[in-house]
Image (cartoon, rainbow, N blue to C red; front, top):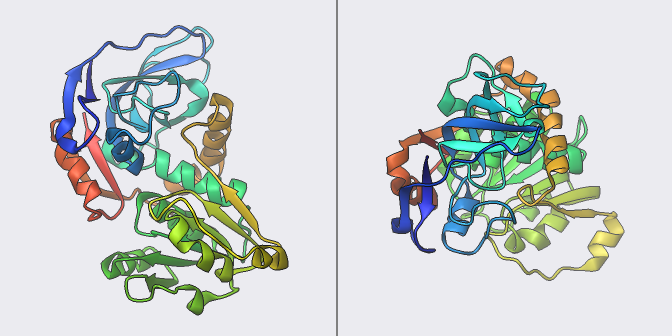
Length: 323
């Protein structure tokens, strides 16, 4: 089978389409999927550069954390899916290949009204956003959500889910164009951090949950922005890994600081996150209340250009590879 392969860790020029061994079912609950489309993530760039190795049991040099495709083979105990059904899911690696081997509990049936490229934008972004904000952050009706990097794939997913549930949403971005686009999705307040680096002055003590896709550079201001019993959900580290802060603020406000990552979780934990998403968010997508966030689709052979495009920070939403 063909797969996106890292010849050497480094720049996008080190990527190639290579023939590799096709996976085969060895356990009764496994499902083999013929991939039709997949999406890029920041983790793919980090792995390509050698900074984010795949977990044990997943290919070191084949990228991809999500996929959508058609079931072509099922294990003897699989009961939720049949051969020929359209599905999507998350994986810890190897998603950018013609075939992906996964567990049935990590798959979701595709709504009939969505194309392969549209569906490819959903798994990682929407499952990550829902798990972080609602399962871990426990955002409630009437509470306010702050999303950093609101124009990213996960940021847009979080914005759409929150607005569909009736929450007020504040978002930050370094690009005014992205803030303007997010307002079309229902963003209540947009803050351009290129012009207003101290965002906490504007929203001090008024936010219940923060989805932070940036990291250390926003940490101190995040604590100032949170209200009493606020929850800070740390997902990304592009703004640095280390931060100093006043412990007194966390104590006085009784804050919760939660770090989360989806990729390295156990099969059982991923299955639970997928099931929660399917139960609470998928009906909103099927009803058209939430729409896939497709920025641009590339052919598989254009994977180098796709990586360069994502790395340029020009994208608004998800960048997809078509098989």
